[in-house]
Structure formats: C-alpha cells, structure tokens
Length: 161
Image (cartoon, rainbow, N blue to C red):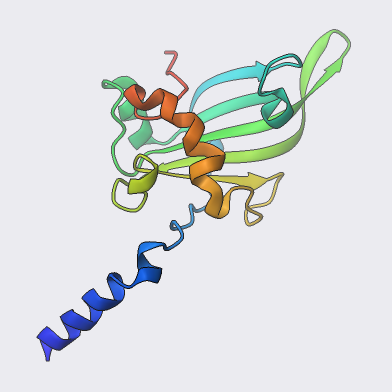
C-alpha cells in the first residue's frame, strides 16, 4: 500500500503540470516596520528606474536577513527583506513621504524558489496586504534584474551600521 501511495505521489509530482507550477506565493511581511532599518534611498526623476520605482525607499530586514548583511553576504533561508516605497513629495524645501506605492518583499527559501536564486519576490500595492503586483511574474518582474547581484546573493542593498 505504501509503495502504491509513493508511486502515485511521485507520478503527480512529475506530471507536466507540476513541473510548470506557479511559484509559491510570498506572504505579506507583517510587522516589518519594527525590523532592522537597513537604509533609505530616494530615486529622483532622471534615474532610469524612476517610472517604476521613483520615490523614497526604506529597506527593512528581519533577524535572519541581518545575518546575511553582517556575516558575509550569504542570506540564510528564512531571510526577509522589505522595501517600503513611498511617493516623494516636495514642500517648503524638504522631501517628505507621500502615499505608499508598494511594499516589495524578498523571502529566502532555496527549495521553494530555486528557479529564482532561492528568493521569492512579491510587491503589494499601496497599503494593501492582499493585492499583489508581481504574482506569477517574479522571474521577469524582479529576478531578471536581481541576477546582476548574483555575487551578493541577489541583494542590491547593503547594511550601513
């Protein structure tokens, strides 16, 4: 009986649909604003990524991701990095945070997201915890650009102690 169940499970796992399965969804990073703040940056008009990513970026990392930032650049499974992207508003010679544009998430699990360097990618629109901006398009929407950081475990940001 066990052999039959194993054969059925193996057959289902190797079925053509299973090989082309969508990547597992990346969950919303509850409580990320209480994690370690890694850095802030602003992408201004004139930058090549302004149309997609213009504004104020706050980068946060959970405790596992901080191990990657502080101990050699290899991020362990369970690492979560968040970029909180807000509109940049100018007022009285200052730059201030405007409405949230997206909460971008990288979650490390080498087995789940093997096809994208061990990272799952997602973007949650505005203040929504459910409306996804990336979904099944992680390979082209995120990972394709992150491959230029392969030597840094696909992570652009660096810890600034």
